[in-house]
Amino acid sequence: MNPNKVCAWLAVSLAAVFLFACKTEPKQQPDNYIVVEGNTMGTYYRVTYADSAGRDFSADIDALLKQINLEISTYIDSSTISRFNKAEYMIDLGIDLEAGSTDNRHFWTCWWKGLEMYQKSGGAFDPTIMPLVNYWGFGYTEKRAVTKADTAAIDSLLQFVGLNKVVLEKGPPAILRKSLPGVQLDFSALGQGYGVDAIAEFLEGREVKHYLVDIGGEQRAKGNSSRGDAWRIGISVPQEGADKQDIITSFPLENLSVNTSGNYRNYYDVEGVKYGHTISPFTGFPQKSNLLSATIFAKDCLTADVWATSCMVLGPEKAMQLVRQQPEMEALFVLGTEDGGMKLEYTPGLKKFFK
Image 1 (cartoon, rainbow, N blue to C red):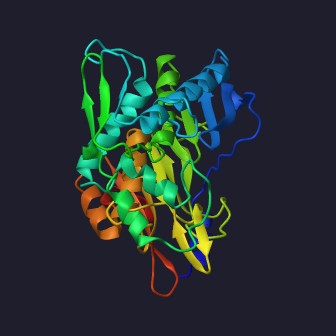
Image 2 (tube, one colour):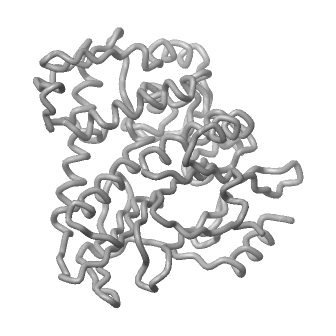
């Protein structure tokens, strides 16, 4: 079945909700559901929640996202991560981790998650990929396509890649040290997922029991939608030129998070050859495989985010083998076929949605 037929068949049989950013002011929905929208991390955010008191959290959510960016955005010159990247060997944050300091907590949470995933994925997920991301034109430096890859230059950049080149000294004060001056961190593969979780935890701290948080398509849900049933999310067709409203399937999202990673929207086309933004930390080149997109369902969005990226680096066979070993996690892979079509591969927990 070709991609268009797959899309049409599933779009008819499964309903989907699509989430887009418009104005920044909150909007009232039926039954005290409120929508807060805005822009962050180079994309949109949209938060829908139920609150009988009609509380407007737009200013709090916006302030929270701004603080996160001040710690983990490589596009902000004074951010914590930028200060580390510009440092020759180390950055002293002057905090006491043992005493539970909350300074730079967003940075540290992303750091610990990145380290955990680096170890679990065997290095496929590597936050020190920044020099290579910049080289290929997907980072904070000039956006430009590489018309001819310089193998020698890529090999020289690989010496800065490997999270074992960054060491945390707990102190106090806590110090993050690099073994080479050129080592840099990049949290773009987990920043949006972390932002989703931070907003969700903010809402739960105010006893909000029904919400859907969405940053650039990365989502976390709890409770029910304004319809009174589970929130539903759509998985886009991973195809160049496909509209964002073209879906390959959809799912109810019940007290779970979801993230989809793929190269079909963020890529460069050089003389008919396309290369995507998923860079392999092993080769230094954009990763190529028949895995068109990887969707991960997990309890928190940060976990879903890092696993989806890791799967794109590992390729379908290794990724599915590793995901199946993870408790409380499900995966949906869209694979390209030799005839130009698509097929789905998924973990057992999703089988009930494909009867």
